[in-house]
Image (cartoon, rainbow, N blue to C red; front, side, top):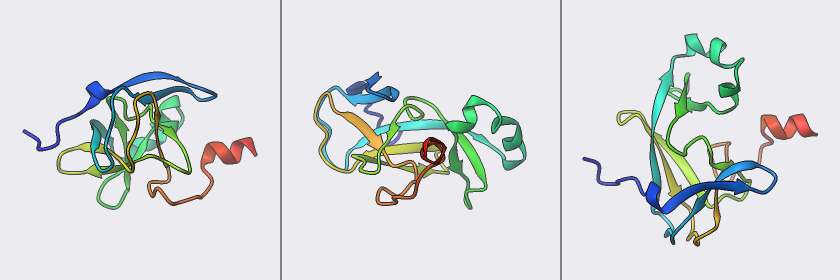
Length: 134
């Protein structure tokens, strides 16, 4: 059994203004606390060309020792929205086959939880969907 059980019971999916769905806190979440531990379906690089052309291509996460593969993140993992000023971060655990979502600061009930899709919470590089809107 994991020492960091999922706290999914303290988050829920709701409507995010201008973004469709998002993940929201239903109870206080402290800085540094694990928000969710999401299992993944790993997709080898050789299969990516088939997935990339589908809607799942926009939701795949980097995966693998050298980020050579991708993963479909289950749970609420694929529903967290992007922000260049996130209140949470994500990290993957290869051996456990999970992505962890961790609070960067205290998150209040009702607040939407955002990650930076670049992986590094401070990375301000434009993303594929931001370039498409420009």
